[in-house]
Length: 222
Image 1 (cartoon, rainbow, N blue to C red):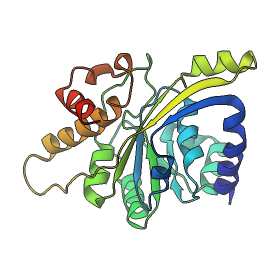
Image 2 (cartoon, rainbow, N blue to C red):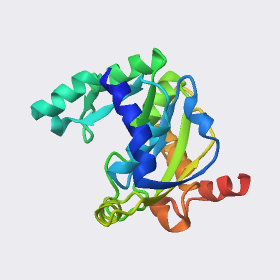
Image 3 (cartoon, one colour):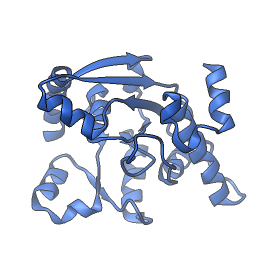
């Protein structure tokens, strides 16, 4: 399977191009069924999370805009990827993801939906909150620094390894939504997810969540 080959290739390539510092228990990546959430500042950090996963049932999400390219379509078919509209409610993709999560697969996703232009946390979107509350699947927060595209490109052009820091948090779950204002609850859940990531980041990278009281509470608990 192509996905298995790619994951194996990452095991070789990532140590060659990065100088990794990992804080937290790497074994947490091997949870039976979970949604791994991280900040999104460059292409490399998504690959890093896959690098830590020693399983070939990861749910690969690709932006809908890439569906028009034959190579991307073929790659998606080979790795059983799901195309998703990042900017609109994509019920078809959501149903597919829900089914695979319920079947025991693992998902890696950035709740921000797109790369941060300045490297700090942007506002999270509701998608992960909905999936986690609907399935009861645990969420594992991860924070990555040092993977900005411009930094990675500069280092690699000079044949230097990229210094990267990965911080692994603790799993948590979101209760199902049973009444109340669904949008308000999803916003609360999304804020919780983003604050969990923010608490793992340096202060200058916490973005719009830097002043959130929940981040301070999580930092006191750590």
